[in-house]
Image (cartoon, rainbow, N blue to C red; front, side, top):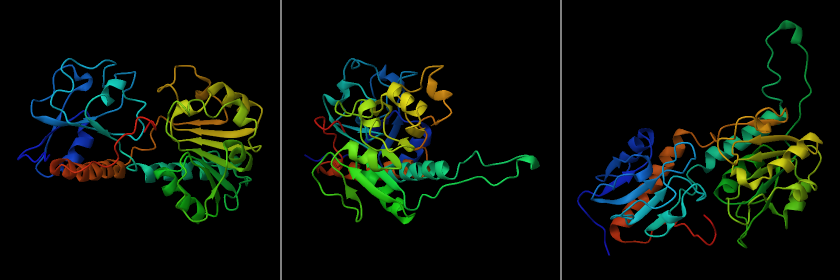
Length: 320
């Protein structure tokens, strides 16, 4: 059935920075900002909800469905690929689509920046006094091995960029689909990947199967001096096991843009550990992420209005 209307109303929980970009891409559809929590019913004509992820501090969606849900909403668009930051009830009703691929390049560049920062000892080599003028030993990344845990949109963006800098790329992948990037070697398991890699990037979604995926058993197989980079979800790492591996030197550096929970509680060891570089889940905050999300949403909006199947529909059995 076609959803064609003269003025389609989209309710959005995103901030104005996002909504203004969306409005430039959705033609005559009307974007109406709605407050966090869905404490009040959505606008009567709203057929689409753009949902922002839940955060414990000032969460934007309640843990239980608001009275009257789903109202007249027929489609929910997430602003992220993962679904772990959203309450279960959001997926029990209208079709839900994810933002798959919208931040892949931003995440790939962030991972490469972390790799280069570790090899070139940034920012430690910057000096501000003449007495500190002395050469510092650095490392090459060319010829080293990058291991990717998960090979989806992020892997597709990261692998060729890493290869262009001379890294060898190996990967694990949940599905049986072949890895589409030439030259990327698929390995059988995490133990093999960690044993061979100089840098490991976690790029898998948070699902029941990936909770604390990187624990003592996996870290025990790590190549000494490993650099672990997490741009996926903090729940993939067992924090205590990582701290132990950092303390004994098997992991030389952990570059963490995500943690569990977010934000970390005051006094968490990651804030002060000398081998941890911690950033506040900021890797995706680039203008292209907003533009890509708006573009993909506009393409799906055209499908929605014509009654065609939507792209990037969330599959609860996979967890993304």
